[in-house]
Image 1 (cartoon, rainbow, N blue to C red):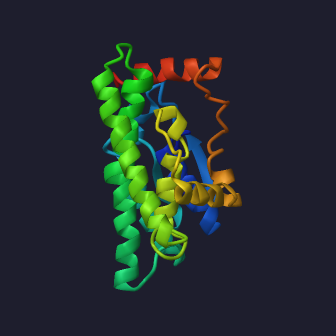
Image 2 (image 1 turned 90 degrees about the vertical axis):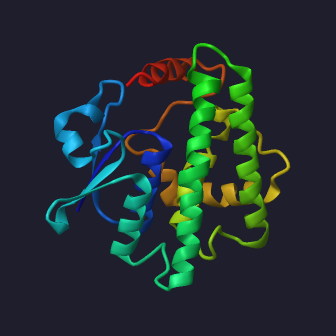
Image 3 (image 1 turned 90 degrees about the horizontal axis):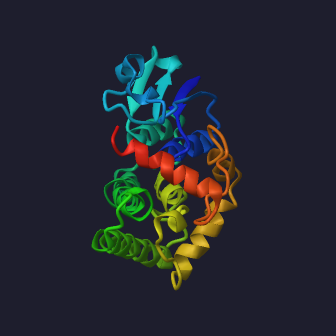
Length: 227
């Protein structure tokens, strides 16, 4: 059994989708980011960085794993699925996983900060991060023009990138003209595990740009910038 400490964010969804795809039993523990649960001493003992997600593998002596990408690798190797065992195949998956962790995630995160959360709209910063997100999307599109999935067979690389890319509207990034990326996004959203995983720990309301829920979410997220 896996204990999953998480919140409804792309990094949290990376792990919940992985657990669903692997059919590994897990128990959800909601971390209330606005209340500062992620900074409480008991949680920091599990995750020294004070972020989400974190897992604890009860079957391995309550072994804790933090950092979403590291968790995905751990779970995939535990189950023997979603990451190849041969050196080259495993490397391809890890490369595209690192592409998300070093590029897609940080750049979309910064786009969110400057486009949605910062009270002062600094247009050069907004342009910089949205343009870089678009460039990274074009890299994905080029790869998907040649491959059904990012690293050969369906893998944790697809899960990690989709959990972020699917939120492109919130980051103010365009996907028009990226037909291969759009094909892949449709395939991902059609997977039952993906649909279920993005509702963990709970389904978010419509966060459309002009919706009240979207405005409230952005306002709440603004407070997290100082934590």
